[in-house]
Image (cartoon, rainbow, N blue to C red):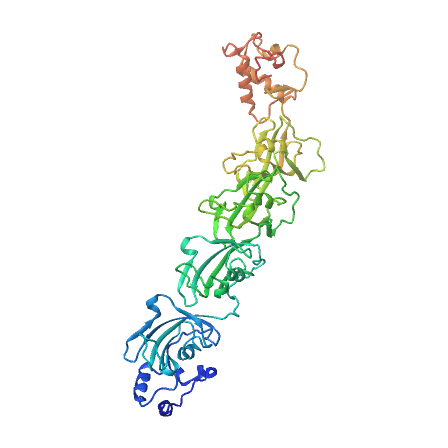
Length: 586
């Protein structure tokens, strides 16, 4: 240290631009040391400037070099502390080239090697300042000058846009190109960190075309190659930014600009939809086409992953016709060709989505939409019942038909496999008389033509099931899948009949029925007669109804005067009934 001080007092310190950064004054010598040193050496003038780098940023990516353009603030004082000039008083940093003789020599040398936001104190001897002439009215002749400066900007005419990727998604299948339309958020600062603008403060992305002259040239270049979701730092030199004019009061002239950008999405006006991540079932016998009615679940997000809507949140599928204009064009196209059970991602550019206006507070204008869909089922209003026999007995002479009474087991599910109902959950088999509107039309059709022991699957479109309104436990417009097994079959009787003859009726039916021959038939006698006919195979009751109930119903119909007995005048076969007075009876 003594040797260092001795060198200074002997005025042996010389400036060398190439070794400026290595000089002894890079060490941690406090400013007060320089003052002491200056006073202790007042036996003669300084031969070179004295530099105190009293505040150096931890990160210094660039140092001022000869020929660079710099912007800096300063306070200028004399030895006694009197101020002679300050850029702060004018509210505008000084701008100019450094190291090429456009500044006083002392400042030229003192600024070389500085980092942005570095602070230095300089002592400039007269011959490196304003010399023996000074500045009339401001700086006396032979004045030693003291400068406290901070560097706020550096650039060079040979600079290009500098981009640094801060974060990049693993999945980057598309990057920004000229003529693309982008949506991005940004924070904008000057090179020294001074904030000048932010899209976040407006709660809205900046939306624009790239490479079409809508942006400053530096931002046009800096956005090229970005992926959706990528974060990037973009440094723009002034001649690719706002140049000599700056921008209003927020961007000074000749300012380098720093943008911290996150790209939200990108598309091109020529884009169509994009299909990704398709998971197609192994069996796909049918694909959706225009005019089909589709039920599907979806999550709708923006390209940055922000969720704007979901059918799952409503616990209800979205149901619609496709290819008929009921939904946005992109979704209409994206659902074409889907299979039941398929999952796919549909990426929709804004011109096929909600355009420049977006949707209220959920979808921004010009937003690319991403739909992850799961197809639950689809059908066409012209569809009929689909039947597939899975097992059929070798002997099958009698099959079920309208009017027959059957017993069967079933499982009923949605096409995604969700089980809705099952007869196996109950003690008894399901039983029904076919063609009597006791079950949905599609199931009634599916149960006809079966042998006892046969098993089949039946697919029923909603217009032959529970329709648009659905039913308890059945979603609206749902296609139903039945697994059926026929276990019992009794031949039915014509509609409206409770008992049919298997042989010719007696010549005198009343006489045969009047067992005690007293010209009147009470309920007991009526019942005994019909049960005897059935037991002897001469007739049979309607299946599925207790014989006593059928007998009572027939007796009530025949006892026309309601006196508790049937007389010859009252008894009539159904075939003899008038068309307008039909009774369910013999």
